[in-house]
Image (tube, rainbow, N blue to C red; front, top):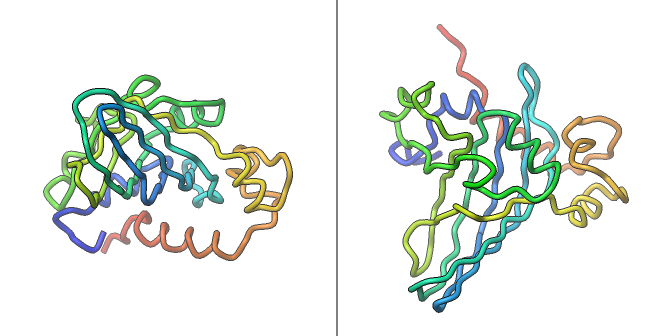
Length: 191
């Protein structure tokens, strides 16, 4: 967000239903490749604040001419509850269960984030390594139940319970994350 020409358009963030932040997705390959990452997913139903974060994992495999290794920070912006419901119900495949596209960036892209964009999910990434960019088509996004149980110190906790912001003890790191997220996703006041 600190580089305006590469930032996620504020209008897309203001209207987002959910956001997944998956730092350091590792991709490695030598003919057969794979990717793995672990992060958090938050939702914001219409007119409410961001939910508590729910831990998720991102996994995928590929085959073909490839060699190298890469670490990529990934942000997924969800336009509606449709994809989030799919993730909560079980394993969710990006590109198969919902259309995913590289999101528009920068100040000039703000006008393009209205009804013209058809994808359900927009991906943003920052890469370090020998591969160029990141392709998420076919990657599986799923709830990480063990991490959620450990983080919230509650056995059997579900994603829906986490998203409800009710009846769970919330670690301090959760509030800090939600405050940073709110800073970039709350619409600016009209003058």
